[in-house]
Structure formats: structure tokens, C-alpha cells
Image 1 (tube, rainbow, N blue to C red):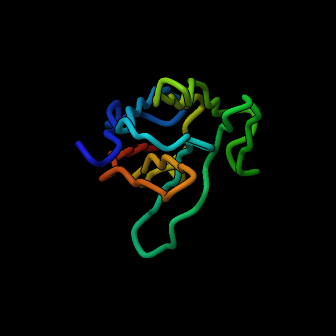
Image 2 (cartoon, rainbow, N blue to C red; image 1 turned 60 degrees about the horizontal axis):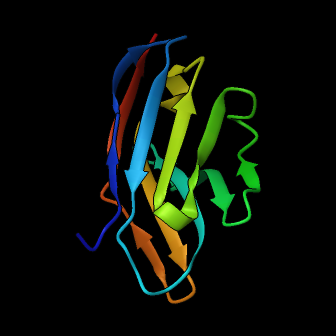
Length: 115
């Protein structure tokens, strides 16, 4: 596979939880960041959370305190634990792997939160 591969999306009720997983393709170039982005219908793609090779993390204000990103860039793996989900979290979630050479995007996984 040349793209990262996401899994774990689905349908959940408001207040529930989901855990997304991403496996990035192996590369001769160093992975600097891995992260999660999302895009809702009619809206632009936005950052959800990122994790750097040194372990530092970054979150969108809308998900702070509810979502947790984890993983190991050296193993090309990242997770997103999503708790206290809200209908506004409904979107296609994309995994991104950033190397010294270029960025790689997954095809996305659908997350739908019902009220």
C-alpha cells in the first residue's frame, strides 16, 4: 500500500466512544509527524490532532479533553481515542503521515455520531 490505512470508524450514539487506527506505508524517509484530520459534508478539511516524532501532541480546541492521539511514528502507527462524541464530530476522518519527502494521506474512515 502506498497510502496510510485507517480503521475503526462507524456509527455511535452521542456520548459514546470510538478508537481509530492508522498504519502508514513504510518509507526510506523519516516520518516527522502523523496526524488525524476530518472533513464534514460541505466543510473544509480541518486538523484534529497530530503527534510528532519526539512525542509532542497538538489538538484542535474542539476536541481537547475528549480525544487522545497516541502511537509511534517510528513504527508508522497512530491511534485516535475519541470519547464523549458529539453529533458535530460526524465527518470522514483521514490519517496523514508526514515525511521529510512528502505527505501521505489515507482514504478516510466515516465516523457518524447520532443524537
